[in-house]
Length: 124
Image (cartoon, rainbow, N blue to C red; front, side, top):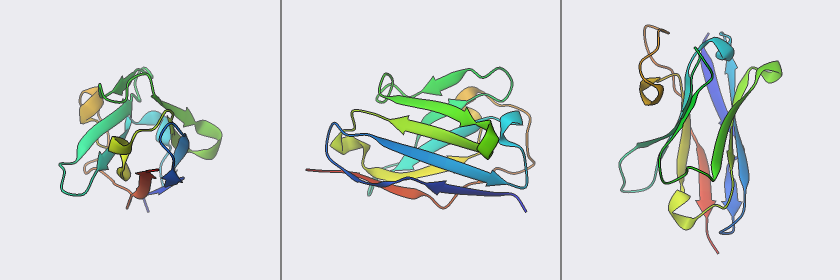
């Protein structure tokens, strides 16, 4: 019933931009903290960004701050990650999740939900 589906990944040149979307079904995303994580080959999964469901405050890991923007598209029941000035080190599979740890724990589901991810490749 509850599902998250990421889209918008692809291959871009360094300095380029991508817009990732996370479409939810079975629940209203606006009421919950939503996060983006990423995992590169051979690397640990890392939190990228979170938007609070309580107050709308956002979090960004230092490496993307000033380049990435997380927002909600409420009309589409989705969360967006606008990625600008992309760097090769941004290459990873990007995942959307209800995991609220990046924002600080917020009340939500009994379990966390994850999408299956979308590939972002930044290369010349």
